[in-house]
Image 1: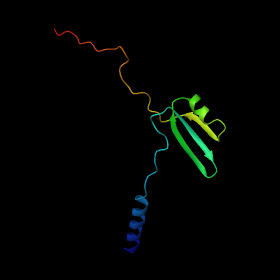
Image 2: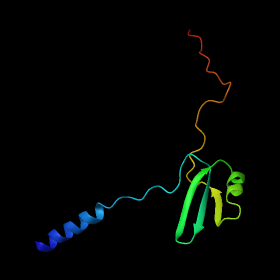
Image 3: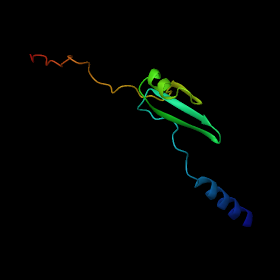
Image 4: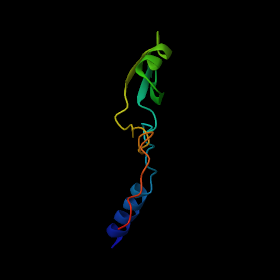
Length: 88
C-alpha cells in the first residue's frame, strides 16, 4: 500500500509540471533563430526572408520559413461579390 501511495505522489508531481510554450508564432511567415553562448531563441515576427536577413546580418542567426505559419486570412477575393439568384 505504501508503494502505491508513493507511486501516485510521484505521478502527480510529474503530471503537474507546466507545459512548454509554443516555439513558433503562427502569424508570421518567417522566423529567425539566434545562436549565442548559453542557448538560443527563436523570433517569428518577420514578413519576408529579405527583412529577416537584413536584421540578422553579422549575427549568429539563421532565417527560415515558419513551418507553422497559418497563412493569410481566408476569404473571398476582392471584387467577388456574391450575387443572389432569382427565386422561381
